[in-house]
Length: 343
Ligand code: CP3
View 1 (tube, rainbow, N blue to C red):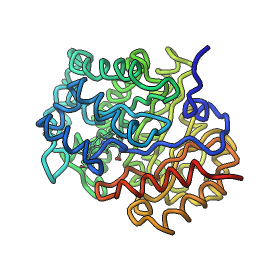
View 2 (view 1 turned 90 degrees about the horizontal axis):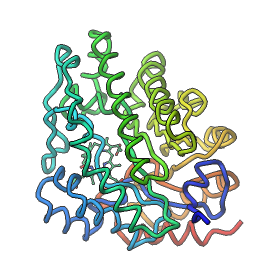
View 3 (view 1 turned 60 degrees about the horizontal axis):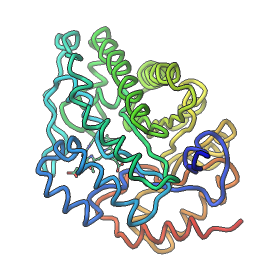
View 4 (view 1 turned 120 degrees about the vertical axis):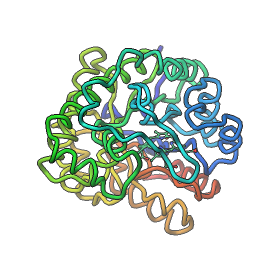
């Protein structure tokens, strides 16, 4: 009999209480063992592309906390890297890319895409073999809009002004970039599923800076295109969409994109989250700073989510990634609170 993987089950719409739990960026700098492996790897991309090390850091939070899901250790920016763009991660600065120009988009080189990403697929396969059978293995990619923001600006910005201006001023080239990213991202997710991922998440971390028109064209449509392409090959695989910061535009996101589950950031009000949950699973949405603060701020935040969303299909998570200054003891407190919950 196939093992029960709670996160995957809930993503398909089956409620469980207490809910299963994992944390975005659960393998990261708040863990001393991550910092040690990271130092050994040299560059951040070396860590992503060395299966032995990527497997090790993916498993670290599973060993320490027994989360219900493991997320492949990689980054959304391996996709532009695999399209031949220069991508670096600089200490204290985050990602730095060579900003793409309109004239370069048609010439993006896809010929080595899967070869460059082969170590990622190997990491997925090794992870599925090594993980406990009940632990869901999540693959992921960045949504085209979010990946495009880094490709265009060449680094993170607070409001993605360079990418928004590019979309307005050079619309045909921008469309071509988004379509290309949607196609290769779908191929990338399909390979992850074939290597052993039980479900996948599409991170649209910068969905929150677009007006309604651009949100529809550059967040909803390309994610729908990815979902359709993945489902054509793997109709059953759960897909989580995470349109961070979308506000009221998250209404109908599941129906319009076809994702199985919607990831919610911490600003989504409970009434809206409950409405979204009528259509299927939701994931989230504790403020990561409640986890930094600990104490009553953490307990109250957990209790509120469990009371509001615990009656339906919920994957407990933060509303965005865990931050490096989070005390490990607070993660233990969160897990105890979620897992000890009674209704
Ligand atoms: O544990 C996990 O969640 C899996 C690994 C993972 C990483 N990045 C590792 C990482 C995942 C799922 C991501 C996704 C990612 N990467 C997103 C979407 C989610 C989000 O947080 O909004 C984005 C926007 C990126 C791009 C990116 N990568 C940025 C902006 C940065 C710098 C910011 C930072 O936190 O330093 C990264 C670097 C990065 N990716 C780190 C990790 C653990 C930290 C770098 C390091 O260890 O040196």
